[in-house]
Structures are given as C-alpha cells and as structure tokens.
Image (cartoon, rainbow, N blue to C red; front, top):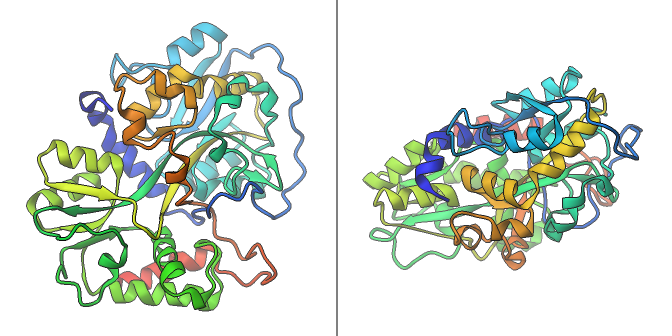
Amino acid sequence: MNRTIWRPAVLTVLLALVLAACGDSGGGGGPTGEGSGFTPPSVPTQQSLGPGEGSVNLVAWAGYVENGSTDPKVDWVTPFTQATSCKVNVKVAGSSDEMVQLMKSGEYDGVSASGDASLRLIAAGDVAPVKVDLVPNYQDVFEGLKLQPWNSVKGVPYGIPHGRGANLLMWRTDKVEPAPDSWGIVFNPSSPFKGKVTAYDSPIYIADAALYLKSTRPELGITNPYELDDKQFQASVDLLKQQAGIIGEYWSDYTKEVQAFKSGSSVVGTTWQVIANLAKADKAPVEVVLPKEGSTGWSDTWMISSKARHPNCMYRWMDHIISPKANAQVAEWFGEAPSNRLACGQTADKNHCTTFHATDEAYFSKVAYWSTPIADCGDDRGQVCKDYAEWTRAWTEIKG
C-alpha cells in the first residue's frame, strides 16, 4: 500500500474495524465450507438481473466506497456510475451495531458487513441470499473466502467477499529476544515484559485466548474459538484475567499503538499488518508473525438487503467492487488482502499481495475469522455455548 495515499483515511478505517468487533455479536471459526448451521427466515433470492434503477444506497465502513472526495486519486465510485448509471449514496457506519440497525430500516440496498454483523443480519431476515451467477467476478474470488461460516448458511451464499486480514503478533526487535513464534509470550504471567504487553480492546479478543488454549490445553476440547461451552469459555476468561496483570495498555486507536511501540512503552502484543507497516515507516524497530497456534482474523462481506429498492444496481455494485481494478484499489487504500485473485495484478504496489498474503491459502488456513458467537455450538453439545452478549459481559469483568 502506498502510505501517502492511505494514511489520511486509515485512522477512521481502523477505528471502524475496532468498533465493528464491539457489537453484540462477533467472529468466526476456521474454514469449513459448510457455512453456519442455523435456519434463517425464508427470503427470496433474485434470479435475474434487470435494468439498473439509477441509484444504490449503501452502508459501509470508511474507506470502502471512495468517490475522490477524500483523495482525488482514490475513486472507484465514479467509474461505476459512468458504466452503470447507478448513482452511489453511502452512509459510513462506525460500528457493526449501527450497520445492523441501519439495515433494519429498509432504506439501504446493501452493506459491507463484518463477521460480527453478518449472521445477525441473516438471522433477522434483513439480508437475502445471493445468486452468485449474477456476479461474474465472483468466479475469481479466492476459494478460501467462499461459503464460509460468516457469509453463508448451509451452503447458501449470503454475500460477496470483499477482503481479509489476520490479527498478528508484533514485537520490538531490540527489546524482545529471541523472536517469538507463539502467543504464549502475551499470556505468560511471569513475563519479563510485564506492563509492556498490549492486547486488542474488544470482547472478540476472548477468541484469541480460546485459540491459544486450543493448542496448549487440548483437554478442553476447543475446536472453534467462537463456539465455547461453559468450561471452555471460563478457561478463556480466566486466562485473560490472568493476562490483565501484565497488560500495560489495551489498544483500540492505531495511533496510540504505533506511538507505544515507537516509544517502547509497549514491546509485544496484537496488531494488524497495516499497523505494523505504519510503525516500520515511522522507524519503530518492529516485526510481526502469525504465531504457530494460528490467529484470529476478519473478512468483510457485501450483502444485499431483503428489502432492497434498487436490487439491480446493488448486484452491479457487488460485481464492481470485487472486479480486479476496484478490488485492488480498495485493498491498497484500506490495508487488506483483496478477495479477487486477479486484483493482485492491478495493485500500484506490486508487493501489496505478498505483504498481505493475499494468495497464500496455507497462511489463511491458520486464521480463525471473526464470526458471531451464538448459543448453538454447531455440534452435538446443542444450545450450551456462550453468545456474544455473554462475551461482552465477561470482557467488562476481564478489564476490571
């Protein structure tokens, strides 16, 4: 990503992502190919594409629908309108909760939902299944993003993948030796870095603890860090309460994390690749790794409203935003891996897809994407798993 292009927008974008994880639902497990197992309300699927209606109303994260007003060089909306005669109107949302409420109004045709909103929208009947045959560019979407727990139900697609990223471990190379390869460094109660460990400030971070316990305490039987029964959940919460004793700061503002690593007040903790890139650009001696236990991560999805008044323009928008050129533009501006494999040939920074591991499915196979924790465990345990409301209550206790 060209730092001179994305820096003016990145604070708003990153805060939007942080807030996205703080709604009343959250993240998703590793790839299954099956999608989520609950039965959603019956909502008809559009079967054919008709003439455009002249406009489309979107709810989106900051940085996803750029028309040149933020930066004249950053504009994938104007070419869309010129090609389709569909004028784009966008409401930038600051949280997944806000997105869910806006979509209930029926005033919007589509939304760029994160994993902590997508299942809520499906379960409420606020979005419709997607006929992917009406989205030609879908054929070039990475297979690892299709029919996943956060964008499908029982093999039925409910959206078009937009992009993805992993939550990584970052450390100061001059303070932390040897280079860590495990999340254990941020959970060690006897850590020599006590007071200089940082963690992501969100209830969804409970999944990070669960993912670590999946590897280190196999007797708990954790298979999906978002499907936690009482024993598994309590073990994760206990680990985080223990971790709180060594945390110097929970981060939710990227500028503070960059400054903390630059000053040395933080020397190890969770981050995103785009934040690491910025920290390095600001001369902080940091490196990142996807630890051996794997990591959590995120993938956003364009979804069409079940009450869309401009469905044909919405389908055209979904095809446009994952077209190679537009998908490359938004991936660079936002700081993520594109969803369309052909976008890698269109990025201005020819190393962008390498930096963000866009084509590395082995890398992303280790990522447990955010999805909504619900009571249904998705297996023979039944309705005994903790839902996101309980995750939120527990997070308040963890932070004290």
